[in-house]
Image 1 (cartoon, rainbow, N blue to C red):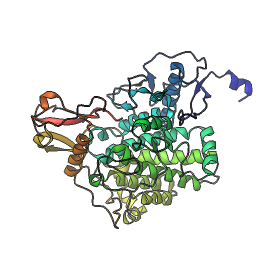
Image 2 (cartoon, helix red, strand yellow):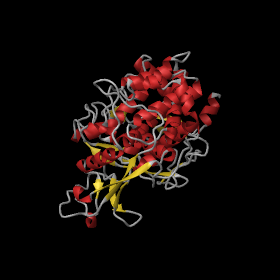
Image 3 (cartoon, helix red, strand yellow):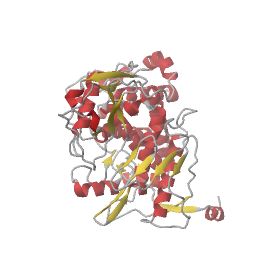
Image 4 (tube, rainbow, N blue to C red):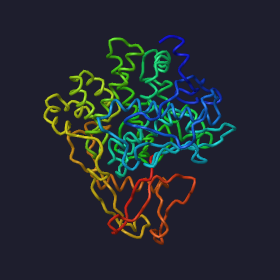
Length: 476
């Protein structure tokens, strides 16, 4: 393309990944005007499109184009990787719509009606979630995974919820690595060691800074979360419901770091296996890792110890697609984070993958919300609720007999579905994340009515009219 042709392409100013860590911020750069109607994941923005006039940071026009660039790039990242025919969850409709000014908060969420981005002024800095590519690409990642595996939306399981959050951060990572400029910058910053902390591993630096002003230990020191970490798997049933950012808890964003940390090491390992460790090699490594993840989440049964099943199916996908070329990188990353025990990683052999191959090959995206889940009913009185409460517990048949590492040696025995579901429910109540309508509360109700805390779940009447059910409102 000639210089004249490049100059003729209409552009808008955007951030490439995040506004950056105040007071130092990243410089906006020109990008081609994004196309939102990208198949198979078309998107839209509720607000009217502004002029392409080069408006800078802090303006509504700039925020619009950053969000549009992010939505477009996330769609372009995942579109080529998903099975043919994949579409948004039916409740979303044909187009996923983003709302850029949803209210006063330091948050964003996906709720099957769209993407919602909030903003707040902190220490004189207006922090708009839609102004961060990483935040927008994270939330779009939730919608992508919901298109692939809608069963995860209402599953009463800390591990499936955490996989959703990990997928969001991975969505931001892979979308960033689509840009040659960022790949070059990361290679320079890390001196080619992709698994160390870098501009693309650090998620949402500005939002993390803003949260830290009021809650100093709630997020990482230099970002919201960092994929460059060493968190080691524990059964979330055994973890505390909350904790400071330097510890691991069952809270889904916290526990997500175990899987996203392993995924960054997978990208790094695949990159080291490329013929050339240059920006093109990094692009290839990101694409390969993303493809294996998509294959795995489509095929992996929804069970307790879900991380291990996804890990096993990534190894199986590599065996089918690449003849096992990247198996060592995959096993190493999952072992280092305890997602697979040593014996589990060794058990996923080529003959074992071949033996399970028919079931894996028949796996398709989508399906009903309750597919693979089992109803677990608990006494409502235990939770200050007037009627019995039904939860959707993960209970599909395991394809691989594998599990995570027990820190004392060997494998963790996966918890039974009822324990997984009730533990998840109790942690939601402990974190004040459940909305319980007044008419479902008993005299001993202990519901947290703090209106500033987003309720990710609610108690509602069963569709059958018998009892109550726990349903998810959103992923934030």
